[in-house]
Length: 286
Image 1 (cartoon, rainbow, N blue to C red):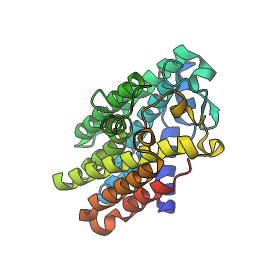
Image 2: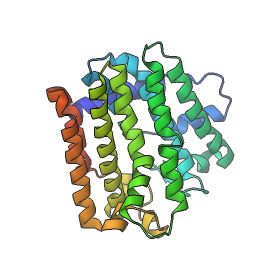
Image 3: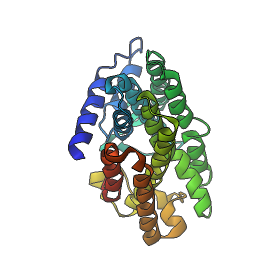
Image 4: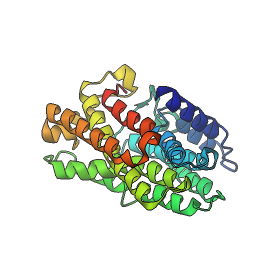
């Protein structure tokens, strides 16, 4: 699983590095590339390539969409780190974008990455390009990531309950971990039953991923995480452990992983990589 993941990541990294971003003036281009190429797991891009592979598609055709997902993710982190949002000064062990380039350019860099992601996808000649684009943009929009982020910032300091946390996590994290599966399967030529299985996998993977992330904010190693920890509790964030306790949160993460694995049973052996990837979520240290 680790070797396959590394291969997908290498493909995504190379494609991101090669993006010309023509026409972007300085310092906008540098600010966009600073956050986009600052490392990270490339999980979303890798998931899309793996889903396309699983469906028997051409991974090369899917690369622009994998890059788009990584650009959208990078934009979301730039904006998330701003003083008006989480006010973080460190991301992946480096100063955050607004610390290096100033708030105005950081906002524009986030806007640039989001709109360039759409440009890159729209330029694809794949016959299913616009359906895949719709899956990704919808997940990033007002019914997906933006909805989760809005609830996250406006409900700080309120009493957490499971239903509210679920809504936040579904939008904030699970949406952009579901879109790689559905878009990748669409690009790979999968049928509706298989696409729905990918949607279910992505939802449960996203929920498990965010629950583990909430736990790492309480128990993780700041050196490995590459960011300041303990801020969720300090700022009164609505998190899964805050709603159900640490032990139940661990059990809930394991349940979501189990559901993610079962969701891909229809793909049989072709799903082994994605199933193993879901299981590895429980052992995350960063």
